[in-house]
Amino acid sequence: MKQKIIFITGATSGFGEASARLFAKQGWKIIATGRRLERLENLRNDLPKGQVHIAKIDLTDHASIVEVIKNLPQDFKPVDCLLNNGGLALGVKPIPDIKLQDWRTMVETNIMGLINTTQEMIPLLKQAGRGACIINIGSTAAHYAYKGGNCYGATKAFVSQFSANLRTDLEGSDIRVTELAPGMAKSEFTKVRTYGDDEANEKLYEGLEPILPKDIAETVYWLATRPANINVNSIEIMPLCQIPAGLKIVKPE
Image (cartoon, rainbow, N blue to C red):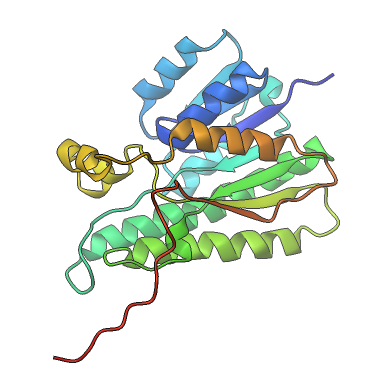
């Protein structure tokens, strides 16, 4: 029986790294991609020899995506699962106190990176045949607005709608599509969002029990291993300490 293969973007930390480790433990071959090559090398060294192929990729650069996929080794093709995990949030201030470059980076990474990776990977997923899947990491920020969420929430709303339309366009193919939308999760998310502020990252989770990367990895694995005739359209996951945001009434001063 052919060894299954998963292609992961953003495999250098958080959900992506946790998923790579879990899938490898379950006997899958891993294509781990991301911007930080040293971290990818450490991941490869931690896992059984020959089970992981690593590639540095910049999701804001279409040519980078094309090059990585074009040069995949033959023994890492076709691909059974694409995990579109790479993405980021930048800035915590509300509109209009934002940096336009942050918005451009989020759009280029979270939207165009997702589009380009998916487009280039579909032929390899079709080759894998029945049971192949695309899992797009969205966010509860797509469905519940909060101050400072602005462009990040909008990019994740795109992920949600794109996933639904992708599923529609792939009608008649063997490829399944799922949007997986986590809520508060402890990773490097806030550190990146605050431009490397470790203290802010730790303070956010003080006294709370957020989602952990392994929780999302387990969900990704469950999705990838459903029977080939089952498509889970979307999953939204929050820690118990987080609730959907309620409507707010503001009286004029």
